Image 1: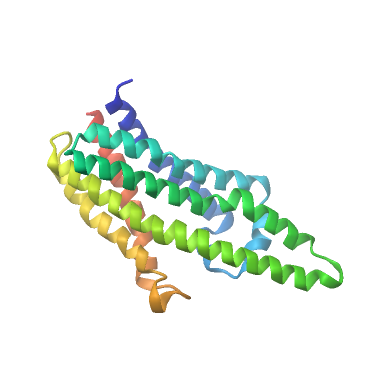
Image 2: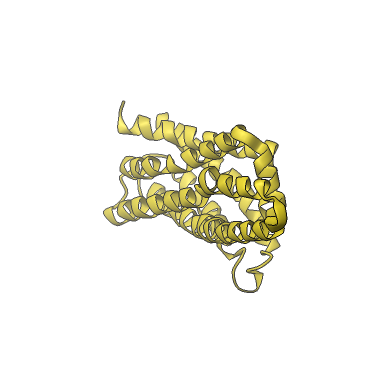
Length: 231
């Protein structure tokens, strides 16, 4: 299998896998709306989700990690000028890693917290649950909002702009695909502002509305890029 073919296959399969896992989490766990609920509700619903919910989170984690080889192979396939190629690989790798770090808490840390929350009993029940809720909330804000979302949107948006620039600078695929990637990249960058400054606590509604639409467009764009490389 050639590098071009492998790149095209990943461009098609990775966003499909990510969106299937995302859809499944939305169906059984009300994701991503559940992320804005209170810790007690999230932990209770998570504990009730069982092994099926854990496997869905694992699938989303694997899909995020699959961006690692995709970023490297796409840079090689597009064969842009050296500076763009190196930056695309570095930023794309970082984007995949922060997304994975943000997600890894769900199949590994949150199950333990949910078990302790559900098992709390006796005179220390309320104190134990409050401790678990605070621990979850801190992990949620740091790994989820800070790393997974803030840095994830930032790096994914930058990577998208670098790929768009790489497409425009070469003739591997039609330049209009690169032009489409530019507004998508900027839309993803808007997500970095959702919980910044005065919006730190409750979030900026505009960014919360734009980002899901941008990710759907981003997924379609990657699939279209993969098809263009194949043909």
